[in-house]
Image (tube, rainbow, N blue to C red; front, side, top):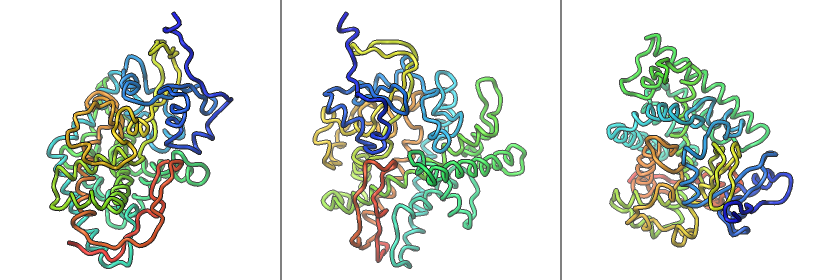
Length: 419
């Protein structure tokens, strides 16, 4: 009986939200080390919260009989990053049906197309960089990927719109963990972006604009729910942004890819010749090593006991994505950048979870993960092999308390030349 109901390690105090904001990506890991336990209890925003990390915890977390997503994401995240009634907030058959819509867009042809578009816009950007004294990789990558995302998704985008739309989309993923003006910028960007995309969907449905066949804009505009009804316009806009926004957010990974190219010269040398396998290993290690999403949240579906710990229905539960990708029991020398660790990788989808864990088709692992890989491989090839440039003195450090984290200088390069 004691084993079935042992007390869960618990952090003392009324609330630890400020500590979470201060420690960011390391908040859960710091406490699992202190408790010597991969599961513990705390209080965040006044609510009892269970925190977990590791492969076993991830396997549990993605068990749909044990956890639901409805009501788990903080409202500030819904109002900026996800949008209301998006696929991330659904459960059960409704989630599987909506997820199938996203997965239908992830064909081999679609992967080839995103790679071609990424190459096209990097070639344009590289030529443009040659005319400039210096460029910031992160800011340029956002605009580049805004162009890629819109063209791939079938969304019309005029050259004079790129900066404005990039600003909106960037604010959606740069603002959720912020306060004050930055957070309000994200809220305003959500309103503007949804209005923009809603207008496009209205035009497609009214035959005023013909979206390319099989494009995300066409598929989402005419997707029907489990009752056979078209998605309401706001929800359709939210899901359209759930295609475009994550593609633009890969700019964070591109900034860290550039950082790795700069700081890991021995690993960069292995990329000569644009070897596809080597490119793949390198970008997977970028995704494992550097911070991206810190955590993901769910609520306990019904009471259960796991490892003797009692999980009560409705309890907010957070899985540590960054901490799982650095867990010393799962990874050899986790704090060392080692792309070759992926040479024989046959790991569990609950061990390597930079964009969520579990199954792509029906689970909550990011549907766009494959798009991310293709974009990153092509971007890495340009940064390592197809451009030469100087790296001036700058602040290349990054903070674990900033969410999302980025190199402080945004990665500045000078004297760019195409190779």
